[in-house]
Image 1: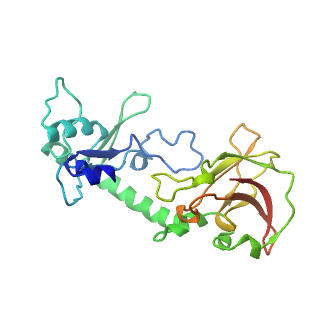
Image 2: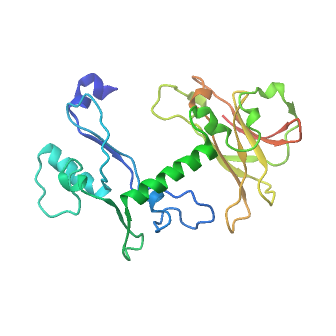
Image 3: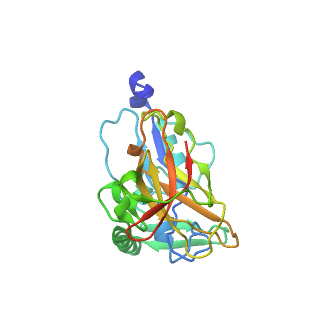
Length: 266
């Protein structure tokens, strides 16, 4: 906001990107390592370039790469590069002429390549699969992924509850709940930690209530080779109010559902 108020943002060159994507395949030891089977997931990353003085955005279908960021910045600002680089300006003809994706393997043992028609076909299939799995449209659906989605939006007072159990939740996050400013750049919307008395198996059903209303559901989990039980749930920013907030983790059981409090963060 300060940059906009001073006019600096309009004059600035801003680049936003990521170093790699990630595969959502289950049973994979390293979801960041590119393979011929997951290149369509690991290779694509967002790349936003705001040019100095620009007023409108446009979409480029070129296959740019992260190594193109430096020469893009240099060309835009008119700064000569003193030594050769692998990339090219994202606005240049070399990038526009690319016919697919090429990515170095994580162990630098070689490259993996995929032609444009095949990567576009795979991405279309993956988008359709994720739309079925996660839904599309309202962000509300994201927080209802998991068991008991019907609990989302219900007040804890309207549900059956038991006395606090012996399984105490140790919160690693969120922090800053005592003095929330809804206008802040980041907000504490991640409830994560571990449950002191682990239950072996597929994980217990959980719900997170923010200020007395259920805002997220999910399951606890265990990591390979680690006997401890963890939880990690994200709730919407709109659940928070200015000032002090209360985030409580519940175990959900029975039908109709019964909530057992496991711990709170404030």
